[in-house]
Image (tube, rainbow, N blue to C red; front, side, top):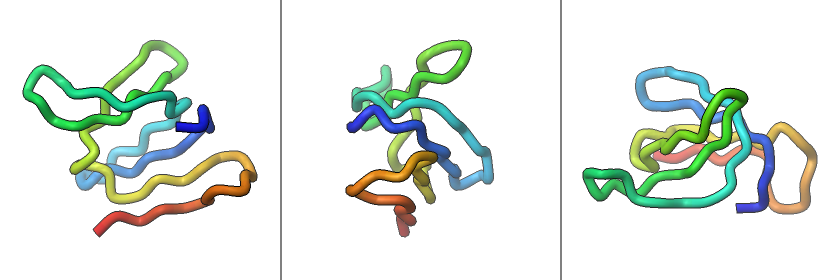
Length: 67
């Protein structure tokens, strides 16, 4: 990850914002995105993400929609 601030939308419509800084597996073995939020670091299961938006201009991407 490039350390960009991002906004994630999950399949259930939850919006999460933070700095995407790594990937990892949770206790169940699911692949996750590590997200540093204002209060803590969280793991977001990749299969639950439907949209990823960067909150800063960059040369790599601005919005990714997963099907």
